[in-house]
Length: 193
Image 1 (tube, rainbow, N blue to C red):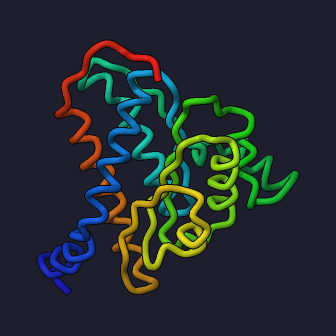
Image 2: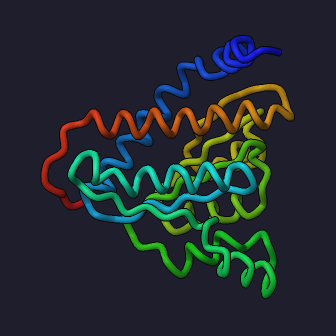
């Protein structure tokens, strides 16, 4: 398959109008946190971990583009914390335990999981729900256990199973779109949440 056909293959999966509404909700939630100076926590596994780190970095650098700083951190970039928790407890607790220690009221959590079946992602989102912390999760395929559990607001790109590259591409494209939306906004002084 040549490059043009590869790009054409991606496009239909990104055209679901439900995704538009979900992305707009996330943009609004991020704006609230930027104005309130609270933190946005991002995470995922594997390729999704790199998307989480990329998104957190773009959010962190938002201030250089709009003049208003954004506190954003990728929990999957915390290698010492991840390996200590995985070793001393279990891998399924790697994100949840970090959130328990670091999260504050009013923060926002953004997860990434192509399958929606990662136990550490599910546990973290369940913790957010029980702590009344707003969360979103980028998902693919059929949304997996994350979607079934109803523990978070989802940004779901439905596709056939196993199309990990396609879903991860869409997640990253959506993140770039969100940053562009944030840059295009008019920013004023911070406001309390």
